[in-house]
Image (spheres, rainbow, N blue to C red):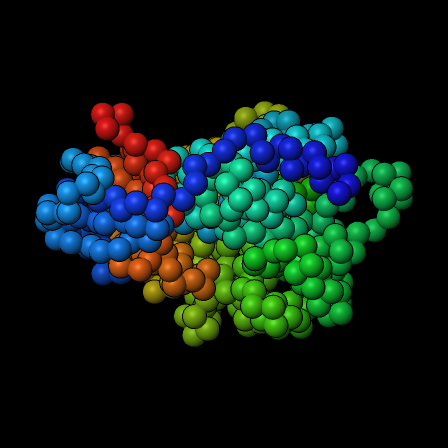
Length: 433
């Protein structure tokens, strides 16, 4: 094992998760959110065994003697939430741009452990990590019970074009670029159809679960355009077709209209951010069944930080101010236009653990609270292509969270999660329990 890999393994072993509990436990919930129907139900009892929901019973059900009970009085039980757009290996700060030159992978790995735990504690039992070399290793450590965190569907390195958003050499001076040489498909940078195929195969070799491309410029990268298209349709189609061979779905970061059109036409599963989404793009997305993951939180965060001198480099600041402020309005138009919406925050831009604030921003945009909750449950499961999570039903994963109040009646309740169960293991209990 190379030294860097050994250090990464040590970093990810910083805490431990309890073993899977086999004995049955009953959760008594005052209310239950039916994610499939998008409605709130009354009192229910959820019986969990071997990491799965064994049964779902109306009311305060009588159970066999000896069954452990957890009474969640005054609380709503919901399926564990999924955030479809996070970056657990980093978190924005004024030092973010220099840290890439000063820190080692093990530094980011240590940080990711804390970010993962905060995310789980906030009620997010699954995430899709869309770009970061740490995330596949963090995923494995969580799955092995070495650290606490959400279930991770990891993209690994995003696929970009030369000079585009996610080219890892953007911002390097000429001497450093000369020493390192131009990045290629192994590093996730492509410039042809053959490169596109090779980049996907490299992600397969690296153990990714999903493919992420940067179909347009981005806000936080060292490049002047935040919305110019960065792939040809044929290049994206080569990514999508090769990804399909390996059972992968493709998420496309996209701010500009033309880049979105190319990505949708080429068959990506989801458009992330979608700032300049036109009516034509919306029609195309509905025709193709393409999902939209707005990441309103990230837009509002960067627009706010752009007002602070020195927070972003000067090449980034105007993009953050111009693009970030528009995403919430785009999400509102997309919902009214009938585009399918799923939940994502782009946390890592904003602070990890604050993910649920996206629900509040969605409702501010005119999206009904019940739909916003579905976006992080059944919709997210559909985007991921999994059928064992996102609902509380017999046989499904026992990913269950609870919070005081009724989030359908008052969406602000989402910030109060105080019970978290993932795969039948309790990771957070109300203080009074």
